[in-house]
Length: 477
Length: 97
Image (cartoon, rainbow over all chains, first blue to last red; front, top):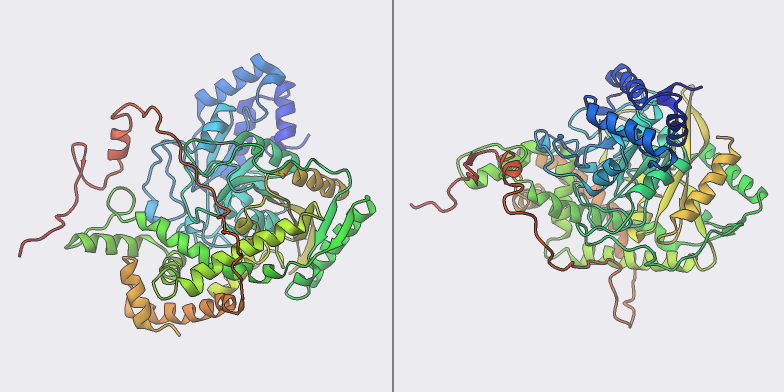
């Protein structure tokens, strides 16, 4: 049998019920691996002490309820540092909140606790989830377990590295423009951005409120489904959550109609990433699924629209961090000095840049040219996708144009922003999207994973899990 | 073209103070980013005749039973940078000349 920390949720849950090992042994295996490997990877910002009461309760529940116990009972998970766990620090990767202790549980944390899941630690991230490499963390970059000279992607790079290096069984991240799916692709994991409103954002430190969703980073598609099914649901504490069945049910087709927007892939995608993508499509075609060429012209403008709307929301959300009620607080002569000093020294460079950009696109004189235009483009993009889904079930492209890049390689902001070129669309349309491994490409003698990106209509996560599992099986994973 | 003056004004609006050296750096990065998002200008989006409904939903919930008064007071007050009892201490807002 594999080492305990290397198991999937499904494998660990089965073995716990078969009394092959205890919850404590599973926790100890993950905690030992985390302690040994974290100094090199910097994936955890904090590894929690064992919660003896929670471990004992989980064991008892499995012993008593057996197969009726929730699958996540006794499973050690890692949480991104922007998801609140009562009593624990939640810094969002920022100096601004380095001393902030959560005063309540995020709804997803409450649901996971009810299911008996355990929390191993909080994971590194780009400050306030802004970035695609985890290099913008105030606490130093996270390294990619596949090649420690490279980034794990971001902003949920800590969660991705932790699961890829087997320091936790699975993790939660958050995704505003690709922050779950891009790191999943760069570390060989499965990553899901659920339908906007499917999962409560209560207790998630906000970045772009019309775009943010919490979702799983896991070793298998099946594990992603387990976590998703545990955290999904309407929440009175988040008025944007949606009830089940809000959008028309579509069922899971036996043979999928897979739309491929080839016109978007003509330039900018690395040749070997394209080869891996085409080979994956061929496998799906051989399995009886149909490939359909699609034109999605508005997609070419999606990233530009995203980099207007997102900073606008960032600048308003982060206005609340003023050094007065909690977090980093520096004092000057006047009240205005208190704000200026706290904010200027508390925020990192990328955060400041996006606050300034957001302030600009919302300022009178520019709001028509930028914000309203981007908002209109977002509506057209959504309609374009809805139309495409009249003749397709799923839309496929590579998650990223290239594999993980080297630490420090993307030093100018715009080149970093282009990492989100394929993923940001699903946040703009609110549609669910899954990244699933589609093979490896070689860079500097190292094998680096690349991901296949699948988008489906609102509330059809089931279709993503079904086709994702097919891709996984075809690769023999 | 963003000037250092523009960036300085935005920073003041956002309650941030940047040293002069950084203003120039932010201004030049702004130019590159705005050139990229400026692609949107080329878009000719016709407003559809039907009234555009926002795809975003925000459903207000009914007022329910609130939590017990004071249940969170100590937890929240423990986060205050400065406190007097349960009160948050801040500087005087209005100064008398």
